[in-house]
Amino acid sequence: MRILVVSDTHGNYSLLHQVVKAAGPVDLLIHAGDGGSDLAKLARDFPTLFLAAVAGNCDHFSSRPRELLLELGGQKIFVTHGDRYQVKWDLLRLFLEGQERGVNLIVFGHTHRPLINYERGIMLFNPGSLSRNNTGEPPSYGWLELGPEGFQPKLVFVKTERDKRG
Image (tube, rainbow, N blue to C red; front, side, top):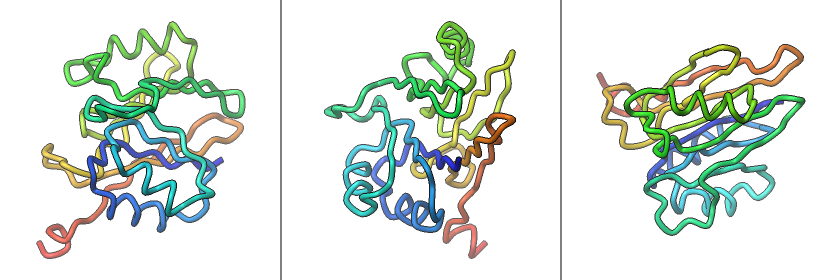
């Protein structure tokens, strides 16, 4: 199973569209929040795309849930934006929530920093941001391949025009 993971697009729909189009067939797209109107445009432009998305702290009037619990191929996934767990300070609260829920994988955003971290049998996965990346890192997104051994994560950094010139 191929899962494309994005977060914190913040209105940069052109880059999101480019990433989804280049990705080819995916079984699921997970958006970990702060997508705003990007999600409606995505549904319009890719009507067959299976989308699981949560609202982030900047999605003020979203009807999307703040958290999702998914089960795929016998694996439990907790999806949240992360702001409610103060992930910009540390990941302890988020990890403990995932542990309490008995998940194998936690997908989150909010920090705009890509991350793959394993903690006591739980993978914490942040695809970074496709927009407003004031971290000094290029925009990024992630892939999760689900197979017999569980999830195989991958982070992808997008070359911007500035990177191509420089």
